[in-house]
Every structure is written in C-alpha cells, then in structure tokens.
Length: 473
Ligand code: GLU
Image: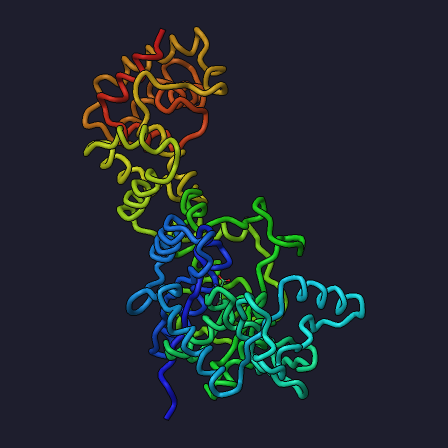
C-alpha cells in the first residue's frame, strides 16, 4: 500500500522567513496539495543560542501571509530531544553505533593530519572497535554511527538524479554529543521518520546531509523518504543572492507592497516551469506542480519580473480587496500610522472610487498608496518641488478664477466638471492643459496624477473647492 504523501517544511528559527525558505515551503505545500496529502511544519530549534521566539513568529507570520497553511500542530524539534537520544541508545545497543572518547585535542590533531594528507574523512575511527574499558577518565563520550566503510551511499534524487558518495570518504558521524544533546543529523532523521514524512523537499545545500542521513535510515532499517533537493536562488548575475538582489525576508516583500498571490506565482516559477506558462492560479499551480520539472541549475532572482507580475495581480484584484490590502500595508511601513490616521469612511470610499484608475498604473501596493496620496493628504496640501514650479503668481490667479467657475457646477461629476473646465479654458483663450496642470497641482500637490476629472469627482465638490482656495492668489 502506498503511504499518503506527507511533506514538511523545517526551518531553523534563527532569522526571518527568507525568500528561499518561502519557496521551499511553497513547493512542499503544492506537492502535498497536489497529492491530497499533508504538509507539516517543524521548527528546528535545537540551536538554543540562535533560535528566538521573534524568529519563530516571523516564520509563522510569513507563511500565513503567503497563504501557505500547514497541517496539524507545529512540531518543535527541541522538545523531542529525549526521543532522539532513545534512537541513539538503540543504535548503540544494537552495535550499530559506538561511544567515542576522543578528546577535542585529539580530534583537532586527526583533522589536521587528514587535511594535510588530502583526505576528506576527518575522523579516523579510533574508537570504532576499541574496548570502552580503555576509556580515559573524565571524557564524556559522543555516540557515533558505525557507518559502512566501503561501497557507496546513493540517493536517487527527484531533482538531482542519482547522487553517489564513496563510503570510504564519509566519517562515522556523531549522533549524540558529549553533553547528551542530539546532533542535527540525527534529529532530522528521527523526526522525519516519526512524522511519517514521505517526501523531503529542501534546498540543495542539504544534499550532502542527505548522504549522512541515509546512513542513519539504513542503520535503523527505516525507509528513506523520496528526496528532492532544489537549487538555491542566485542573484541576477548568477552570484550568491545578496540583499540588494532580493535576499530578504518575506516580511520585506510584504512591506514593499507585493501581493501574496504575486509572490507565490513568482516563487513557483523560480526554478520550476510548466511549458511557457507564467501566470498560475493557485489551483493551476497545484495541478501542474511536479518535482522532476524543477530545474537543476540555480534560479536567478529578477526583481523586474516580480514587479511586472505584481502589477498584473494588482490590476486583476477587485477594488475593495485592494483598499483592504492598502490598509493592511499600513501596519508594515514607517509612514503607516500617519496615513492610517487619515482613514475615514469618506477617504475609504474615495479610495474605492478612485481604484479603477489607480490600479492601472501601480506595480506595487506602495506605488498604489503613493498614487492615492492625494486622497489621504491633509490640507493645506504639501506640494512637491515640481508642483511648486507650476504655482506662479499667474497660475495662482488662474486657480482663483477656475475655482469661481467650478463653484456652481451641479451635480459634481467627472463629466460636469470637465464641461465646466472646457468652457472656462475657451473663455480664457487657454488650452485645456494650461488649466489642467495648475488644477492638478492644487488638488494633488503633484504634476502627475490619475485623470484630472476623476480626481475632481473622487475628491468631491467641497474638498476640491477648499484645496483650490488654499492655492488661489
Ligand atoms: N532546518 C534546516 C534549514 O533551515 C532544514 C532542514 C531540512 O529541511 O532537512 O536549513
């Protein structure tokens, strides 16, 4: 009987949810969903010095924001240390592991010697067959796996293909440290086994660990999960991903105004492809996702592509959900509280009304918020330097006359204000643009904005007349 698919995401909470971690989680989630299985979450908090609660919170938050829901309770690795020890003891009892009494100095000397002789195996196996009765006083032994001395350790990886290691090059790895704490290698294997994990999908920086872990599986007689080691994300020039090139936490993408759906879509295509399809609904991703279609070479991060996808998702979003997303964004940006203070029933309604025009032009929610600034700005409006240049004594005087011409417009709509403005421009012998530009500056504080008649309609009569009065000579 084939086992139901169980994947897991196993972050170490030593920092935020990195963009690469987000992609690993997404792949695990898609694979589980595709096969009607489960994705579990295991927080690998065994490094007590570096694991922090804020990092755990950031990981959980980041996953939730990305829309990746894990199944069941979160497993905390540290809490399972007794079980890890039990497995090490079992291996010891079965003669598949042994106590190693080598001191730190002895180990250092062995390493130096191995390196000088160009050998990758750093531990010489001294205590493998030595009688524990010879153990020196006062040394707390580690427990090491009696790894095979010859032959190969082979992983049939879904992404990397067949990968083989010569056992003669692999050390007898430490399972339990002298202080009784389990090593990472042991903990991962025991947890994956106990959690019934069938598929391990993770970064290819763990490929070498897979060899060591396979030896533990073999020693325990446990079935190795299917392995899929995905190439890491690199910068646009092929080098290691730097901060400038996107090596940021998922929270940073949220604060930059990316939509979770856009980031998901971007991440799924980062190293995985399905023909030349670029845009995927969540269901399409789930249906199409598969491990062998993940490429073997490093994916390159491309901000421009992410932006353009994000623009697509913004345009596709309905207006009300964009207003909600903008409000949510305010919690994550420095200027958020000041803007939030200006959210009222009126400004929310204005945002909604302006959204069809605003969303056409924005690649991120930050841009959208910026373009919507004229709605959320308080009077008297701050006018940017380009706008200041438009506000001369002549144009201020023009604004005063225009205000008078608009005063009686009723009802106040884009069409009626347009008609009034055209009539005004005709009468003054001016081109429409010569009137529209000072008007735009007076209403938005800027020289670019959504269509000026839409701005008039969205702000409404009273607000427009007040803003014009603020700038009129
Ligand atoms: N905790 C490891 C990491 O964050 C992942 C371990 C694994 O997936 O096996 O890199």
